Image 1: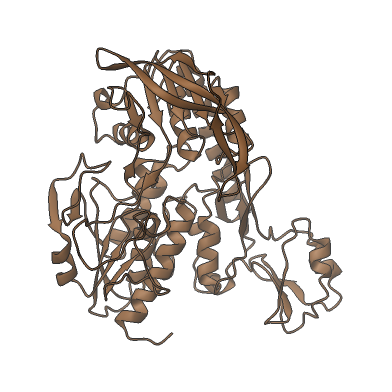
Image 2 (image 1 turned 60 degrees about the vertical axis):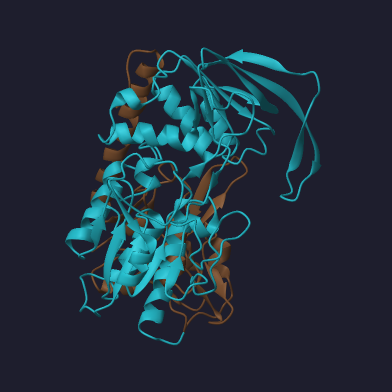
Length: 167
Length: 353
């Protein structure tokens, strides 16, 4: 069943919970990292498990595959460490693991999914900026959150004009 | 899609180990640790002075950043599915003075009693001592530390406090001192509450603002007046209430130990602004659950000193989160809580790392 792990940049508050949790379950090496851009906006960078993944297409060793949930995964035993996946990734995601002598990246918490548990970052994000599930479910949820945000902005605009309190 | 899953490590509660752990403080560090510990089979009791677990995620950070249901449902799941027991409105203390957020305390428990009754203790009490700069007039009515200001707003929204206890800023002029995330939140909440005019004063420029230029620009778009390179000199009162504030302009000189250029007041550049409320977001101090001698070391800034296992200088007492790190952020506290919980588990089960 196709699943997506979607990180919504407009909902992210830059708290770094995703990164902390990911680091904890991956022995000190997070696969999602929050970057503070010069503008001051925090941007979490992680694999987006692209539908037409350039890394799968470019890998000369055929080490990158898609699993039954749609997660793009690097097989460390096949990886030759040429970094071509990093070169073509629009998000700069794959990382060379010196110990493993292979490229690594987010596997959408493959171990957890096998046990029927969602990726840890989506479980713990306090701002609910990370979504996991079937594409239609995730999209529905994003639209619901966006509607809430628009409504809230309208309310606060009204209170800006001194009409009432935002409760 | 539901609440945070603090016990994300396991699907269901495992077989009990028979060990009991007390977590003091139900904020991000305490809850992350509790989730990790219950997944190891330990019995976890969480003590908190507030009426509901969640800490600053519920009682400090505005709802437009962290949805209330996200924290609330997460805490409920920890209780219902994993058997974590909460002791709300319960302050664990040992001679410690009053701090912000004490309004809801109904019971007090001696810290030593907790240590006696549990196999291990985790202190995750955060930084609830917000200070106001010591300038003339800082004791006037209408001067608030930002933490308390935000705390009252959130307490009212959550239904624990009457709106009459929230500073009635509607139609009034508010100045917020500082440019960190707390300052930005205090300014935004003031706008949302219908303040007539909101000022934000910072002693450096927008480029040094800890919250980042983007957040400051957003505030300006929403009508907040940004007063960079200004410092408060005194707060002017009338009948014991704030009437105005006197600021002085600054210039930036040599970088200090943090690498940021030090602001120096420019003599004779003082000016006054009429304001009704002064909200100070200039820092918070750690609040460990003791002040008397307990054999637990604190550093110069009042933070609890821990070793690489997150253990304090007292055997079996661990600490995590902002009470160790100083004011940080939710994710750093969560991460610290997780590592501390892992250490507690190893220590309890005598696992060699």
